[in-house]
Length: 337
Image (cartoon, rainbow, N blue to C red; front, top):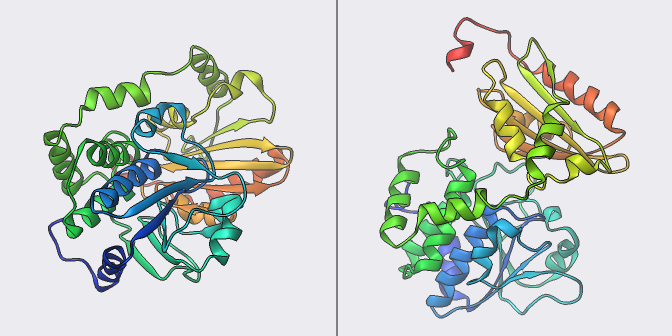
């Protein structure tokens, strides 16, 4: 499906909710990323231009590299207390209420309708009243683009920058396998609307601190290869100053995915004592979403994560054992997939 095709019945129900309601609260997940924040910025501005009242609230503030979105879009960071008034709470780029952290309780008990916009697979009982979901979409921001086009909303520089940010961050600047014709066609429209790709790239990827290269070097020095070199594992212990200088683990993941033999990368960071955060990536048909779900997490087939309780060394060995179980026997064509 792309922005020129008719919405599904479920998506049409979500569009009707956008048309009928007047006040919205846009909610993102903890540690919001480019897809989440870009989608919020685009939807927030688009609904405002349509005469709606919009507030944005996340469990955490935006990272520094996405500050250019915050200049035009008021991202709120939840502290405590009541939520802004709203008829509809819109959840962008996630489908598990627990991912809103301290906001989960107030959101769950609020009488407002709940609407999900997402491209991640969902497992379990839906908590929402309506949803605009497509797991084949390359980014949540692309779904927001479809929504705004269906609603007849105008496109200004803020809408365009938000959608473009979503797309480029979730497709790895068009390098990942989720890049498709719709992704590129919409991106071309966004450039015609005034987006400057070089400025966006510079803001996100070329404003890193001087400490980051050394942090990357520290982590790469710990790489272990398992499964005949097909699985790369990096561990990041709690309270490790050289490695802690790395705010975003994507550079390490990307470097390791570039190794010819590597099919799966497992980055395991101890975020507090006996609590580990997994970031898993695949460059073949290996399903890291299924792997992450075994440890209470989830995500996409080729990008997933989980929060796992236990000592770092123990968690690492459990994770590697599970990853090896799911590793298909090597075939002659494996290197060409």
